[in-house]
Image (cartoon, rainbow, N blue to C red; front, side, top):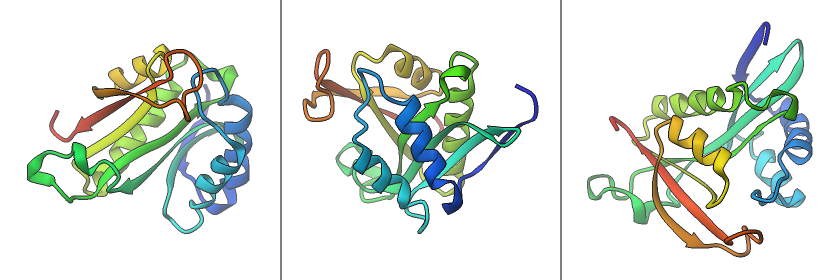
Length: 170
């Protein structure tokens, strides 16, 4: 990949991010209803969602979206109960770029940005059987916390999600 540019997404990128995710994200393991995808990515405009993207010669190759949240408070260490933490929402790479480490690089950039924002715990989830995502998450240092039935989001395979976490200093 020559002249790869990684940068924060802006409101002007939202439509291209939606198009990339809806075209290159679907597989048996992903839950990507179009209305939810568009609603999630639209919040980039007001800063509720952040995203780091990679482009080469103006062509969008992939992105990772993430946000600050309190949604995983029950999984927080006691010392940080009630603290804001990070959540990695979506990760997608153009199918022509799969296997080149771009997803791992984007995930690493998102993690570094969340650390800069002051969080100490970052959560991410995946279909229990999604081996590619599991490998990328392990490579980034995430550890599995629990696996639970999630049939609404995981209609294929085991129907389960696995929640993973990366803690500062881990």
